[in-house]
Structures are given as C-alpha cells and as structure tokens.
Image (tube, rainbow, N blue to C red; front, side, top):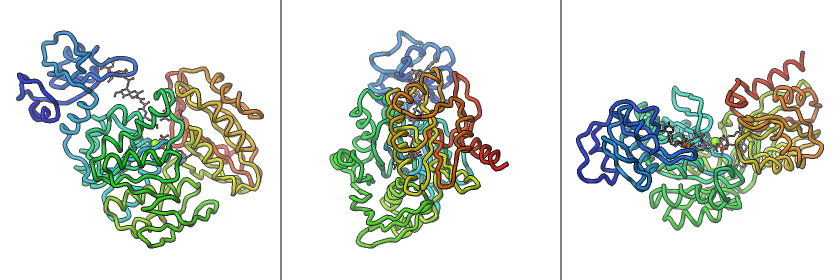
Length: 484
Ligand SMILES: CC(=O)N[C@H]1[C@@H](OP(=O)(O)OP(=O)(O)OC[C@H]2O[C@@H](n3ccc(=O)[nH]c3=O)[C@H](O)[C@@H]2O)O[C@H](CO)[C@@H](O)[C@@H]1O[C@H](C)C(=O)N[C@@H](C)C(=O)N[C@H](CCC(=O)O)C(=O)O
Ligand SMILES: Nc1ncnc2c1ncn2[C@@H]1O[C@H](COP(=O)(O)OP(=O)(O)OP(=O)(O)O)[C@@H](O)[C@H]1O
Ligand SMILES: N[C@H](CCC[C@H](N)C(=O)O)C(=O)O
Ligand SMILES: [Mg+2]
C-alpha cells in the first residue's frame, strides 16, 4: 500500500513522498522490518518516540509520532500527529481493509466475555457466519484461538478482522475493555452497535478514579458509535442512568434491557439450580424462555446479547428462542463436576468484587449445606480490591480458602495477607493445587464449591514465569482422587 492511501486518514504534512510503498505497520520498534511504518505511541513505561531511531535503523520508511515528542532528526519522514494511538488505529484499519459487515462491541465491568459469546451463538443459530473476540480468544467457524488481551491492539485486531471477513464471517461481537477504549484500540472499527452491561470496581491500578473508569467505558457511546446506531444498555445497574444519558446525548438509538428495560423487559424469572425460566416482553409480546444456564447474572447477559442481535436486524422471536440453546463461556460459572454425594464444583472467573459477590449469591439459594469458596487476587494489579474481596467472601461463603492467583512479581504471602486482613476465619493455603484439593475433600452433601478468579486461564504466573495450571484440571483431578 502507498503512503498516499494511508494519508487519507492522517493529517499528512505537504511534501511527504506520497508514492512511498508501505510494507506494514508496527508500534514496537523491535518488530520493525524494512519498509514498515513505525508508530510511536505513549506508554505507561516509555514513550515510543524514544525508539524512533531504533525503528529507523531496522528499516522503517516513516515514523508517526506525537507532536510534543517528535524525535530529533531522522533521515526518514516524520509525521507528527495529535494522537498517535488514534492514528495507529485508523491506519491499521485502512491498511488491512476488510471487516465483517456487522461488528458490535460490548463494554462493562463484568459480563463482556459472556455477552460476546452469547451474541455469536445467537447469530450462528439464525444462520450467520459469526465470530466473537475477547478474553477467551477468537471463536469463529473453524477457528478457536486462545486469547491474550481482552481487546487486541489495533494491528492484531485489524489483521484478524480482515482474516475473518476473508473467511466469510459477516457478524462479529468484540469486547471493549477500558484499556482498549482509552488506548484507542477500537477507533478504526466500523461499529454497527454497542452494549453496556454494568460498572463496578476494576482496574483501579490503571484508572485514577471511578469517574475516569466510567469515562473510558463511555467512549464507546460518546465517541465511537456513529450517530443513530443502537446502544443496548442493561437498565438495572447503578451506572445505567449515566450510560443512557451519554448515549442519548451522542444521538444513539437507546435500547434498554432488564427489569427496567423497555426494549426487552424481564417480566419474571424463576431460578432453578442449573437453569432458569424467564418471561421477556418485546414489542408487546411475551416470550417464555428456558435458559439452560445457572447464575442470576446470566439472564442479564443473555438479554444484552439478544438485544444486540435484534437491534442489528435479527428477528426477535428467533433471537430469543436461540437463548434456549446457549452454552456458557468457558470458566463462567462452569460446572466442572460433582462429588459422589452430589455436591457441585464450579469454576468461575470472578476476580473482582462485584463478580465474586454475584457468583456467591447466585449459588446460595440452591445450597442446602455450605457455600465454599477458593480464591486469591492477582499480583501487580489493583491492591485495593483485596480486602474488599476478603470481606465479600467471608460474608457470603461459609468456608473461605484464600490461595494464590497469578502473584506475578509480588510476594504471594503479602497478597494473601491483604485479603486475610478482612477475612476473619478464612483458611490460608498458598498453593492453589493444595487449596483446591482441600476444598474438594471437605465437600458434604448439599455443599457447593466455587473456585474463583482464573476461569478459562491455563497458567499460573509466579515471578516472570507462567507455569501450566488449570482450575478445571485441578478440580477434575481432586474429584477423581477423592472418589478413588
Ligand atoms: C497497561 C497497558 O495497557 N499496557 C499497554 C501499553 O503498553 P505500555 O504502556 O506498557 O508500553 P511501554 O512499554 O510503555 O512502551 C510504549 C511503546 O513503546 C514501544 N517500545 C517499547 C520498547 C522498545 O524497545 N521499542 C518500542 O517500540 C512499545 O511497543 C509501546 O508501543 O501499550 C501497548 C501497546 O499498545 C499494549 O500492548 C500494552 O498492553 C499490555 C500488553 C497489557 O498487558 N495490557 C493489559 C493490562 C490490558 O490491556 N488489559 C485489558 C483489560 C483486561 C480485562 O479487563 O479483562 C485488555 O483489553 O486485555
Ligand atoms: N452481568 C454480570 N453481572 C455481574 N457479574 C457477572 C456478570 N456476568 C458475569 N459476571 C461475573 O464476572 C465473571 C466474568 O464474566 P465475563 O468473563 O463474562 O466478564 P468480563 O466482563 O469479560 O470480565 P473480564 O474483564 O475479566 O474479562 C463471571 O465469571 C461472573 O463471576
Ligand atoms: N485481564 C485481567 C484478568 C485477571 C485475572 C486474575 N486471574 C488475575 O490474574 O488477576 C488482568 O490481567 O488483570
Ligand atoms: Mg472478558
């Protein structure tokens, strides 16, 4: 592609060689190959412009950088822009070109992975070629890649979208994390609709205040979605009102769902242990739906997903009927097995306060014995959530076992101590394998065990090393050993 073709999305200064051939784009100087453009973006640890000379030495043909941070003399053209991350997203979209025709993005503290998975499943059931992109990876016809970031960086993202479009994928649902929104990772995506699930405490290591965190989430509505596009908003959250207000102010078509929703209204719900029956009203018609998933919150996620499908053109009856065949996203209140006495063991990705609160409250009505929880908090992440989660666990569970969850560079015992400080009576077992085994061993008839925090993850990061570790595997092993 020629620089001129990319220039359409950039305020390129006159005098630049428009017919310059561009072989690729990167924001990491270490990945520059001859012929590529290097985009210097500001980071947490460094500013990319510090690596412009390195990029040039490796064969970059042009450098895009912030106006304030433009590097001193380079032989190759330097293109100063106001917002290098925005420029990166726009030129990546331009460079890779194609995207699935109907793209939707989901934001919120909890439920994003579940909603994008459900939306994909609804679309599949009505006959579209659909994909979901997020924390658990990319799922599309013939494709199931394990994920790393919740919202991929623009280059990886647009490469992926072009591949999906080339493979005939016409519908895709993606997660919009607050990091992704702040870092402009989605700014080149042609979005047909957006959705909001809820807002709780998360990433307080990255966002200075809750207002800042909310503002990041709201970028989806006030900046990214085109005027008139549908915004599907869960109506029963404490932050539904400001989200609705922001979406209205941006001229979006607001579609609310939930008990207070007017697009999809939850009239009644009856919970059973592994399923729930719901009455949902849409356009004056009541639909009775049998949702084959546990957890109060899953009906909310299902409503948001159905709302997205309907708002982007799927027939309402078909979309709601499709909810009856949904499978939960891996590691989200995932029933891994039961002890011989019938006590169920769930793996769940609750690693933030509201999620832990929800998951523990969800199983309580079906637990005649004790609710037992095993969890920890990640290292190098928000420290403030540790005592909050300790308090929630001991308030809502009968037995709390505090263990390790990706201590990363921190001292694991210090993380546990911060949780235990607010968790009187909790048991401390650092080794996660031992903790899961101890919990499985104590299961009596009527008990429920929740192993929280890692969900689908396949590793335990200790220091700089990630060792293979799966809560699913550990639970299965412990159940087998107990039965033997
Ligand atoms: C905290 C965070 O979001 N970091 C992102 C950020 O990296 P950074 O600020 O640390 O970058 P930096 O090290 O300061 O470097 C600045 C720039 O210089 C470049 N560089 C650096 C060194 C060098 O020799 N040459 C060079 O060019 C870097 O590639 C980078 O572009 O900018 C990078 C490039 O855009 C991102 O890839 C990176 O995401 C990292 C990988 C990450 O782990 N992010 C997590 C926290 C994240 O985004 N999580 C969310 C939410 C998860 C959830 O809620 O579930 C997600 O969407 O996954
Ligand atoms: N609508 C919801 N309301 C509250 N809690 C939820 C909701 N949906 C899911 N959860 C809880 O949050 C956990 C994570 O769910 P999910 O992966 O769908 O959310 P997410 O927003 O993608 O989270 P992350 O940002 O961590 O990837 C679940 O395992 C469950 O404990
Ligand atoms: N995307 C989140 C996931 C956290 C999951 C939990 N297992 C942990 O390691 O803290 C993060 O990296 O902060
Ligand atoms: Mg997710």
